[in-house]
Amino acid sequence: MRVLIVGEDAPGGLMGSYERGFAELGIETQTFCLARAYESSVPAIRSRALRRVAEAVVLGAFNENVARDLTGVEFDLVLVIKGHRLSSNTVRRIRESTGAPVVNLYPDDPFSRERSNRLAYGPNVLAAYDACFTFARHLIPEYERAGVGQVEYLPFARDPALHAPVASRDKPAFDVVFVGNLDPDRVRFLDALAQDYRVGVFGERTATVVPKGSALARATFAPAAYGDDLARALACGAISLNVMRPQNSRSHNMRSFESLACGAFTLSQRTPELSQLFVEGEHVVCFSNVDELRAAVARWLPDARARSAIAAAGYARVRDDTYARRASTMLQIAGLVSGAAR
Image 1: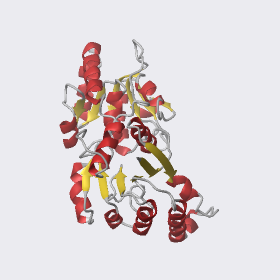
Image 2: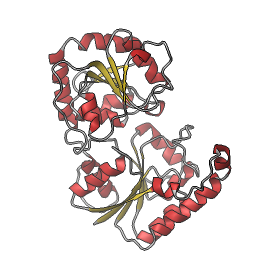
Image 3: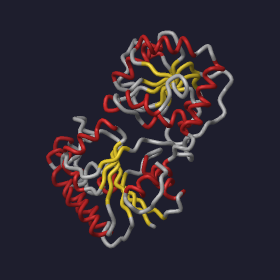
Image 4: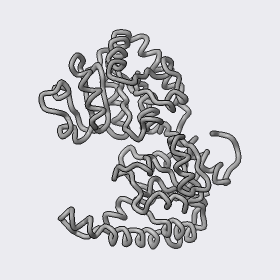
């Protein structure tokens, strides 16, 4: 069996994790990077305004290049991860060229108004896929309204090559550590902690969103931690903080699995779906607002033994929830294998 994964080759990204997941199942994989294909289609225009004007032409050239580059290759399954710039016609041409069902895994909210999440050709392009996978149950009705014939819930997971416990210091460098990019909500929560605790932030573009003179501005900032650097970054703190973006506020995010998989005591923003995936107080500790967050840090920071017990239980919960398991589920839904590993 051969699987083609079409996505973006980014450090710690889903394309690499699924490539390893399929390989663990003994399946031959090939990858195609959409980011490189798009960059090669963009003319050398310095002005952002002119690039926007030329966007329709660039998208057309990009889609033509993708369809051309994937002509004459045969696979049993094509997995498109996000693929927000692909047109319905390109999806159909990939199916015809490869002779395989084409499925989509969208790791963001394709119905969001955020530019980075939006589908260039609108949500109806999702109906061109043989099946769509979403990380959020509450988005399933949106997929159905977009005309998708088969939509399946598939949560994020753990990549054993990247997410595993590492030895931590007896006395962590930080009371609370946050790994990820900042937005106003995340700044608000972290600022409430930085007043009284040692806070470490690993991320990009942090200086542009942290108000000067705020308590958070006095925190320790480090470069973003991707791949296997994530576990080492989380090990620097007694508590790993997970704050959802608006699109994840009713579901979960990648860090929901990754933080537990790295053996970190995780303090996560509470969501309806997170409460279904994990047992609060056993696998993870949750909060809903600033007051609950501060109370949770005050409660758990002095109790290293209890934190260690919850971190161990959290790791045990996600240890076997791997991308190989998710890949197996995809193959079952596509009708390529039988079994029940969901």
